[in-house]
Every structure is written in structure tokens, then in C-alpha cells.
Image (cartoon, rainbow, N blue to C red; front, top):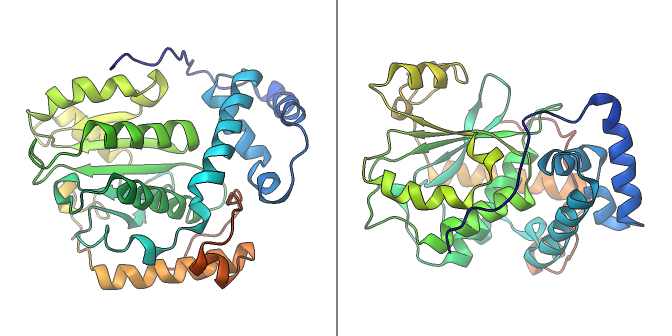
Length: 292
């Protein structure tokens, strides 16, 4: 049940001289695309799928086709904040108002503040936040960073294994090369037993992006600070900033983002409120960062 996926990845990126040829080959292999599927499959998108499959065109094609199929069913482009606001009431997952040193959007996760039991609703909330994080990436940046605070976490309020597995599946298979780094800050020792199970769901490339940080471990703290300015980093993660999640104010920001999202991609109010649209969300690689 917990067998690690047999996916081999090399840390070496595709040679720049071969990159364009690979993208062209993958696009030809995909065949004719139209509508939002065509918009989603930008060159940058194809490069990420190629990177995730170590330049293997056939494997990248299969992975991308599975993502397009998943998006046609899950419909992440139709999710609005009003659909998932209840999940966000405790601030268990939200976009931070700062970036890391690489300009990446930061998602803050606080699993100890889990407040619901519906896996479907939790996955919808997760996908909404991933899409929003991508939407708010500065131009030229394609990855996000995760900060995970384990305050209040215990085995009694930990998410089921299926939820963990679904989360990793979505992130790895449908948002390849979107995660730049994930810091697990000060997890309790008991988490190590859970981690021994969880890590088997990760492929080798993703697991290298997961870093454990302990306040008394100088090396791990220094590693984290190479990614974040301590003036921006909340005290919960060893920084100097105050983390104050205000659900009402955050909801206003998300509603504003939703409106910009609809306007930018020409989505109608009917598609948003009635969930009538079945389009795949286009690739927002050139969107400007949002106003905070």
C-alpha cells in the first residue's frame, strides 16, 4: 500500500539547447488543442511537465493528458472563495502577504488548525489556494514556497492518510514543478512516525524539496533564512513579523482576486456562480503580482 512510486528523476535540467526541441516534440505529440486546453498548454507549462519526467516526451505527454482530464473533472477554474471560505475560517491554509527571497508566492499551512472532516471540501480548498498562489506569482517566477507550522498538531487531529495521499497526488501530478521548497517547522517527534509513511507517496525529486527546520538546529535555521528575510518571516517560523490571519480581511482579498481572475480570462459571472463553465484554467505565467 505504501510502496514508493517507481519514478526516477535527475536533478539535471533539460539542456537549454534541447529544451525548445523537446517542447516542440511534446506539442506535436499532444495533437490539436483548442480553447482553454490550448491556453493552458503554454511552452512554460510543457517545460514543467518535461522537467517532471526528466525530458521524456512520452511520459510528459501521458502526465499532461492526465492533468487535462483531471482539470476537466475537478474544474479548479470554477472554484471561488465563497465555495471554500468555510474551510479557511481558522487560517489553516492561506497565502502570505510576503514572498521568499526568490520572489515566490508563499502558502502558510497550519495543520493543527484543521476544522472540517470532508476530504472533498478540503481538497477543493487546497486546489483553490494553489491556483491562487500561481495567479499571484510575479512575472518570470513559476514556483511557490510552503511554510508548514505544526503548532497544535497531534495524531488526534492529523488528517487521514487518504487526505495526505490526495494532496501529494494533486501537487505532484497536476502541478509539476510548481513547488520550489517546503519547510516543515518544528514538527513534534511523534510526527516522525507519520512521516515514515507519508514520504513514500512522494517521488524522489519532490522529497528533496521538503526541509525540516528545528529552532535548536542552527544548520536548518540558517538554511531557512537563505530563503526568507527574517523581517518578513512570522515569529511562528523563527522570524520577526507578526502573523495575524484575519478571515474577514483575507476573504476580501480573495474576492478581489476572484474578480481579477474572471476579468483577465474573460470568465462570466454565470460560470463562476453557477459552475457552468467546464474550461481548463489557462496558464497564468505572465500575470502581474496582485495588490495586497
